[in-house]
Amino acid sequence: MTSSAPIIAVDGPAASGKGTVAKALARHFGLPHLDTGLLYRAVALNLLRWGGDPDSEFAAVRACDFSQIDFDDPELRSEMTGGVASRVSVYPAVREALVQRQRDFAGQPGGAVLDGRDIGTVIAPDADAKLFVTASPEIRAERRHAELTGLGLAAHYEDVLIDIRARDERDSGRAAAPLVQAEDADLLDTSEMTIDAAVRRAIALVEARLKRSA
Ligand SMILES: Nc1ncnc2c1ncn2[C@@H]1O[C@H](COP(=O)(O)OP(=O)(O)OP(=O)(O)O)[C@@H](O)[C@H]1O
Ligand SMILES: Nc1ccn([C@@H]2O[C@H](COP(=O)(O)O)[C@@H](O)[C@H]2O)c(=O)n1
Image 1 (cartoon, rainbow, N blue to C red):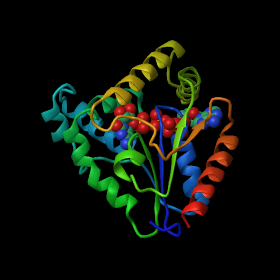
Image 2: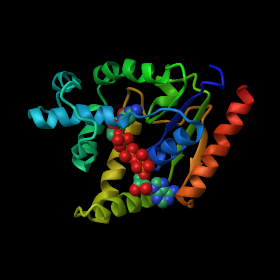
Image 3: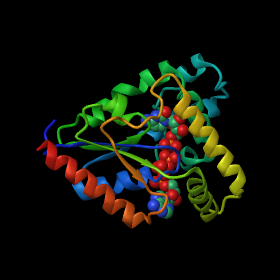
């Protein structure tokens, strides 16, 4: 892959700020951006609406149908949908059903930024730049809690922290495409960083990688 049409992979745990960083990178480098978590959330939302059982791999695979999904639907971003997304994403057949769509996005001629859990390891292992964005569970829970209450939703910090820890365990512990830092990814721990500082550091890390691969 040449640096004129770069693929940038951004991975990390829930509420680490990877989406914020990925969107800013896309703006900075003039690239299209895909939040791959939305694909797993779409499967989860189908399942919830159809009354399917998240413990059934068969039902989850049937829910890999985006024909009725509006990607602007606010329900996609709910905590309930995110929790079910992390359950259906453990199934290899669900992951398999979503791979090609993500690889097609990554492979478009002008380059792309994708964020998720397995972008640098499975979807685009040859990406030109890879970031692993993280922060402590407590900081991530604070940020998610502030986000939810800011939207006027009732949320308790302790519950959010429990949910974040459960999500970390499921995403990192599954056999298929677990959340793990790719060997050639740069680590960006945003625990002590403002959004501006995290974005500036992300741009600097990616620019350095692109220069090296030019
Ligand atoms: N460095 C930071 N300092 C403070 N708040 C931040 C920082 N980075 C992100 N945030 C805020 O934290 C929340 C979560 O960020 P974001 O949505 O980017 O995380 P994410 O990793 O993409 O989450 P997920 O994929 O689990 O939905 C948002 O409200 C965002 O504005
Ligand atoms: N590449 C990815 C992206 C997401 N997931 C799973 O989906 C859940 C929701 O993702 P968000 O980024 O929107 O929070 C997440 O907890 C993962 O289980 C995935 O497996 N791979």
